[in-house]
Amino acid sequence: MEKILITGSTGNNGKAILKKFASTNISVRAMLRDISMTPIKADNISYVIGDFEDEHSLFEALKGIESAFLVTAFEPSFPDKHATFIRMAEQAGVKHIVQLSGLGADTTSPIDIARWLGEAENHLIQSSLDWTILQPASFNSNLFAFADEIAKYGTMSAPFGPAPGATIVTVDHQDIGDVAAKILIEPIGHAGEKYILTGAEKFTYTDIAEILSVVFDRKILYVPISDEIARSGLLNAGIPESATNALAQLWPVTREWGHTIGLSDHVEKLLGRKPTSLRTFFRSEANQFNIREA
Image (cartoon, rainbow, N blue to C red):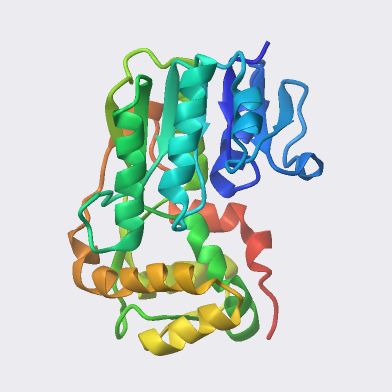
């Protein structure tokens, strides 16, 4: 009988947790909206339909569960979806939730994403459940957004200031997945804790381009662009205006304050190993970048 539920099972972080569990004999239940979209097949992973906008489906997915991993996409409905899930978890008798949040979560922030994260955290903290909150830095997988441009032109165009570009801190989704799985399996000692998850290095965008150049043996350059051009690019790619506006709020903050973000040793302390390096990430995800001659 499964005692652990994973949400967001088709996203990068949800899949990372399932990948970790697939290497164990621990039975887990994964929630998704479309049962045909099962991302990882293993004898110890079962799938159940669940929708954050359907309370009944959430309650059914949570029946018999003791620990759950909670993640949703960063969008205006983010706090409300977390609130609904937490309420259904309380009704279903869940004991512990591991919530994926993010650095800078703050209910008073003028930055939409930071405010949404803060509100979602508060819903969990104010609940009757035991909780652990994971606050990751920018995901390594966010760099997939440059994959087509890198493959076609050998460039990374972004609104993060003139070369070398803003300094950022990232973390690998598999490190997040491994941390979450560890806490879900044995939550004792983690209740009421917030863990900051980062890699072991800081990078400018020029640094990232240089790492890509070495890993893929092809010259790749960071190309600064204006906020207006970047915003138009997102809208033209079909990103909703609300999401585009929220992302655009982060660009000046990253340019001005990115260098002030500190590195955390929580990944190493929790997993007993160093965080995955950006170089290792690029090598393991080479197929995602589809490097080829332009």
